[in-house]
Length: 450
Length: 88
Image (cartoon, helix red, strand yellow):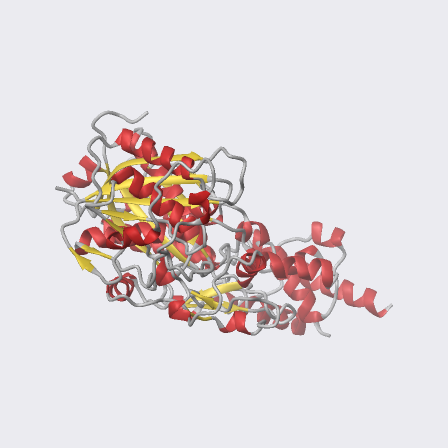
């Protein structure tokens, strides 16, 4: 359990964002209502085999990297060159694209936090970072060389394991920053990003660590995209900028995107004592499961229990913004909308769905959206839910089913909660929500440091 | 193929390995040790063996890889052995 009086501050952030050179560009584009989604040439090549060709993708070049390809396996990124000189070659050799983003995001977070080398390398500094998927780009070519080309196992090199293993991002960060505390990954599908930050919060709150680098990553991988395309769950039929449409009546799926969001967390009094800028204080983290045996379908009851757990941990909770998961899938958005409104009421807060601007970053979604929430606190502005043009004036199918326990209002009744333009207002508290396959739900409340 | 030609080709392979410091490739001889003289991580040895196989268009025996030493000479010997096996 938490140590009484011990609080957790967010003191740094960094990451990699589609079409943005850095965090500043991300901040500027998001709050001016831009979409970061483009047609993806790498997907368009396969237009006869896939449904969707839009994505918030990030190329190696855009993240300051260059892939090195050996001659015999022409599409296999043997290693990378960091043209911005951030990550040494020895660390690049054990990393896939997402792990490199995790490392650069960590360096940015530590720099922003102002930690000394002694603090970073301490036994009291942990790393808790993960991605939702495997190292698909590396795996595909390694296995192709073995199974299809009949090559020796060594032909793909000796780094197939460290570049594809489930906790490769945390391992690579730890080897780079040389912390001596915890190094782990929490993996929970699309709740991964927030889940890692939540676990990191608990490590500090429970007195086990003083500082933690935490977050989620999803490296650009066509292989990952194809998996979701096969499920017929990706948005189709809109221009790239209009493809991600949370809550909109005509939404037909999410936009599969990629990115990295890393934050630096620190015990509040320690951060305060050294004069660190505090971007937010974490009030509480709560997570649970639907418990209904359904891998994919969202659960109203599960989300209401999620809220109950969060509210129990934050007496007097009164968020000014609820940053929702809001993927733009047909069912998920409105169940989530109603679970929020049935908990908080119909007035007094705004709902923000950042996926409307950059799509669904899968394992990075929760952490990049957490950074979006930090920026909302910092800017005192609510991000717009672009493309939420028309809300359904009719009831959803699930509202008319026997046994439905939630609101009997249509989505249109909540229009006032969902801004289509950036809103400037006093923001003291934000709740962040993310969910994942398997019925996993996560919620975190953060507040401005007063 | 003369041994020095093989050494020169190995050096060219080493230039493509990002974890090898280029300044350590100036005075490479057959006695140069990848691990102690080049400060190379041991995990890179197998990568170099695989790259050498491609460069010289040979395939080493797994047992020979297992018992491979860490000097340039060890790799030169292995290439000559593999080439001889390929010819016969």
